[in-house]
Length: 139
Image 1 (cartoon, rainbow, N blue to C red):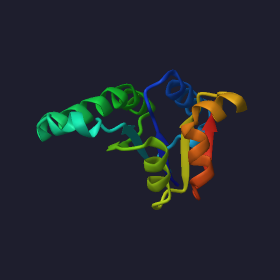
Image 2 (spheres, one colour):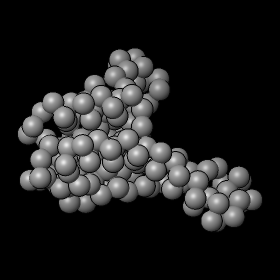
Image 3 (cartoon, rainbow, N blue to C red):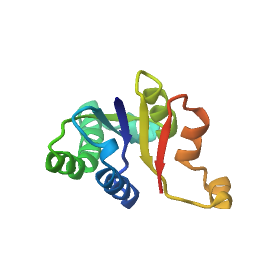
Image 4 (tube, helix red, strand yellow):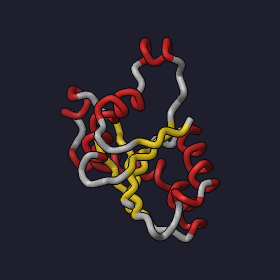
């Protein structure tokens, strides 16, 4: 099974990894893992005055900070994963990527109540609404 793991580095990402570790059916060499982190774009006006290499380095460093503990987690499990850093709106990027050949999307949710999701707009709600790939949402 090809599994896409959406990670933002929050405590909810750690909770999701703990859930995976506790459920053998989701971890194992029989699966292929890709971990994605989506960095919000730097506002256009700011990006216009920053050279491309600095901006590219900022995006890569931000994703790598999220990936570092996840790399450790997968190494401890004896598993390999591919790591992909993207720039854009998280829900749109995750949905588009999940629908490109993955069998399952796994992501943590901040667990806002229905009122909180209405007011704040939840990435997980937007992904659930737009994704054709099955989603395992960990709260």
